[in-house]
Length: 368
Image 1: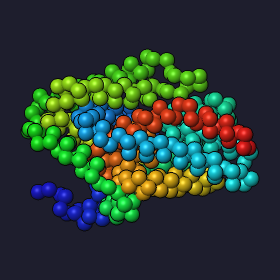
Image 2: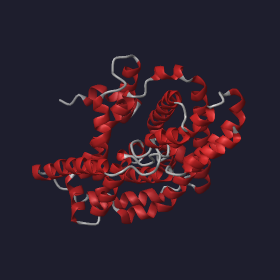
Image 3: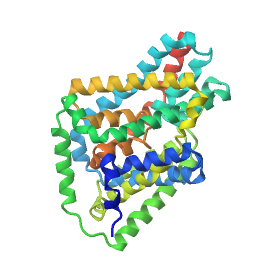
Image 4: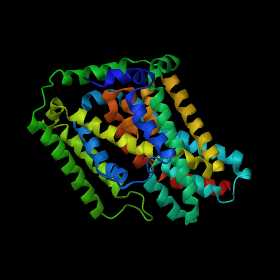
């Protein structure tokens, strides 16, 4: 007998993805789970590219082309809102912050547009004291992952948000219809199909990582690291394979296996969001929260003016704050069939994060 009915009340309260994220976060905060573990790094290193490969492999780019404009607009709005929010918040709070706070905010900006590798690159570029990294990492982890948990939890109110945004759901419905035609060709998965999907996917992820580690990092200081190269490799390969007969693996459940990989990664992300860390950097934490609120507000205004569904607000936000690791997870909570869109937007966010944070750092230095 399935155990799901016994806990159906919990799943009515919040979808399973919320529990996958929040329970490990709570256990980690109570000290019952480690906030750092080699397993978390292994999942991020191999399972993330494995999942992204399968999700992009099964994507119907002809259908995705129909949502190109909303995706691009919300991605750029997300990036622009982070830049705007950092500048405005620093302008009005700089007198209350330490003299080196501009360096901390420059590193936080690099993380919230490009990712952790960009944050470390920014620290090297500014020759900032290594002690500044701790509070920035804490703020990045708690605020960004806290927003991820809140966004997933609020996915149950998506219809209400779409009504407020005056959203036109026709584009998403059209894409879902296109993807539904693919689902109509689904067949029972055979063991050889599963072996090809799992074995081939993991092997490709490992090869991509090995190749990425053999390449020199991009930038001096480093802007694109091995992790960034790996994501770029597997997403590019997945897109290329989606034009070949390999896309037929979607009929055998390649996309579903890709989602399973993301759901394995989600508890690892939650376990790293230790709520006790809030006490370590209260000023920067408050500034980071203000930046996040402005970022969300700008995205909400943009979505309302353009009548975009809340899916694009979430995807545009996490393509910046979270990147390729969080964007498909958050996107899947709002429209599971369009998680690959979040993955592609997350990769684009990596690319935007190469040079924009450097310009922000120069602006903050001038303001300081």
